[in-house]
Length: 389
Image (cartoon, rainbow, N blue to C red; front, top):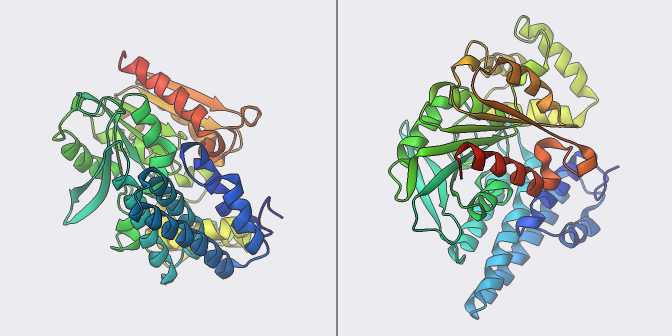
């Protein structure tokens, strides 16, 4: 039984919203209020409860905006945006449940409505990429918007979107004097949900297109561009740094060699590994969702073997030594994805740092979600030292 919701997986989705409370997201009271009507809910009623709460906050925000209470409207729009991700995450899978893109669209509308009312400019831009356009947002350094500043690019993982990155890292970057560009690539956010573009392992190709645009933006110091990725983005950021050498720093939260590094023997015998994974997932709803709902959806496959074959390209094998820029790896105590961080650290030949986070300091969970201020403080202290600021 979870903390707020009886179903452990739904509780994980619901409590994830608390990771953004310190940056203006939902409060403990908000989550408790939703849980009061959906504590024993299934995925369908869970969705309805979260969407209803988000819709109410958005309606209140619109009313405040009409009546000239702009700051209150901004806060409520951004809180509203935080309601929709927990709602649609349980619906990941193939074929796509129509409620998923509906809630995602509401999330982005509320998010952009809040950004439009912010005193700190956050401009939406598009990244041209192989005939498509990747959504990106540029948040300029707080109080130094017109100055030429270093740039931090944030890249996502398996199932977060640009909205989560805004609360988890972009605001902190701007407060520390960095311009911040955050985007969703193939297999993430709008490219996946609205355009049906699936994820790919060669993130250096994706980031190359992002850096091409970043270097044209006014006020960006082209010689001080850092890339930071979280969750699967820990692998994606490292993979990008193996081939995009305009990056002046790389941050991998966590230091992930690749998804299959967590499954021994998967590359050598996909069929046997698929059968083992299916057996494990039979009694593990979290694993079943991660692999066969989210995994199939993000990679565009329909079988466990096809998923494992798709994952084989997501590796640093034969590539990690190509990373030349200073690199920071994280490893949280209770985060399975961080278990390969020591392996990555040992293989790196560049200037490197490994930061460990513990449960005792409230940061032992995946991507230090419930203590992002601590993570951001240590990461940006490191980046300050790299850029000699």
